Image (cartoon, rainbow, N blue to C red; front, side, top):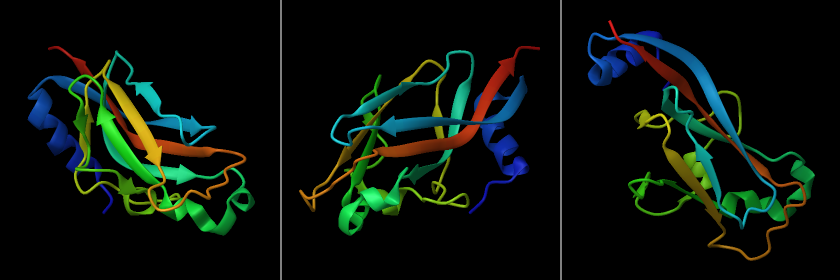
Length: 149
C-alpha cells in the first residue's frame, strides 16, 4: 500500500488539529558495520517523524554467504517508553523491503521530535553469517513541523 498525500494529511490532522503544518519527505539511514552491535538514532528535535516503512540494503551482496540476510531478525524499540514496534524480533525480509518500492508498514508509526529509537539485529536461525561490508537500514517517511496560528 502506498500512502497518498490525502492519507497523510488526514492522519496528521488527528495529532495536530487545525494547526498549520509543513509535511516534507524525509528519511534516516542507519549503517550497521557489525550487525551484532545495536544502533540508536535520535529523531530531529525540530519536527516529528511519521515512519512509513523500513528498507534494507547490503553494500556488496556477494559478501553474504548463502543469503544469510534472510535469517536476520530486526527489533525496533522507542527508547523513552521502551515500547517495541513488534511483539518480538521480526525476520528482516518480512519487515523491510530491499527495493525502491519496498514494503510499507501496515499503519504509519508516529515518532515524536527528539525521541530516540533503538535497532537491534539478531540471527536466531544461523550462526554462519558473514557480513564483510555491513548492512544499511533506511527509515522512509515524512517530517512534520507545526506552526501555531
